[in-house]
Length: 393
Image (cartoon, rainbow, N blue to C red; front, top):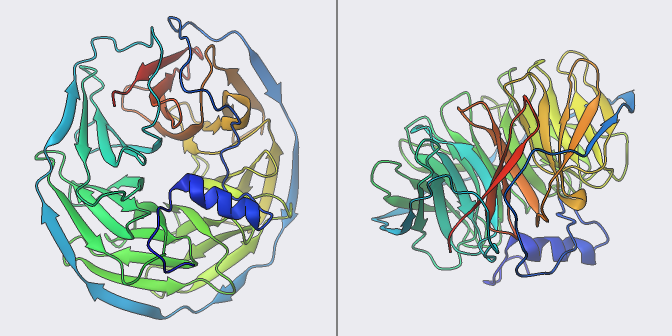
């Protein structure tokens, strides 16, 4: 089944996980509406505060993983923007379009927000100063752009989950280059720039990949055991790459110099780790979509601490020194203090479909995607007010 050419969107992957009895990295918003009435955004009034945690020490398992494949193959194309929408203010005041499936989001080298549109097969950018939205079509049909990050070469790099490619887009020209992975059915997902200057990405089939932005050479590393469905990945302050192993219920790290992979078991057997980031305290923080918790692994002791919240999916460090996360299943944005473990949750004043990725913008706000509602949202860490922006088709 893995090698067949078929549409493997994130929705389909979640369906597969449900079939095997474990919905890993799942977006649990159950709404199926296509349109909904929106009013002018206002400050959020509903706030919940929680303090709940448990700490465990987990013994790591270290495995040497030699590269299994090294390839160099790519194509370069010029991608004309499919739409450029001036959004003066850009506030949600009418019914929101659906179908783009906004996923990951990151701040680009140009200061704009860049995000993937999996179902629309596009890469989008949002200029914070002007509110202008530009969308670029990916040449490969049904590519399923998913994860995205800023590369060391000044380009945006992204994964094409369904096409088994790694792509890059120039923020200056909009040109897109695609690099083919060595086989079908690898499901590339999260991607990040490593300390060695290469791009590192997860392959849900059970591998970690790296690609040189200079040569396009791709190297893959097998994850021990059954692979555990790796999803999100981040560069840690210790010089390693850290990633979530959703079905394996582990937090893993890989050395960019040796390729050795170390796995750390999460105490809660139903954690389903998904999002991951480096915290302002120098530890690795992650979301547990199955356990509705936020997790932290100490780089000093390897101990894992879990904090109970209402829900969790994407996670990012905020400018206020806290960790901010999306809560798709309960329509909230949350924050947690790395010092006290106290979490605060903010209710959205509108119906949001599929709160997903989150990142800190250079304007001091946290920005997040709503994948089923085709919107971007922002929340002020100072006052907790939330604003939503419609993204055009």
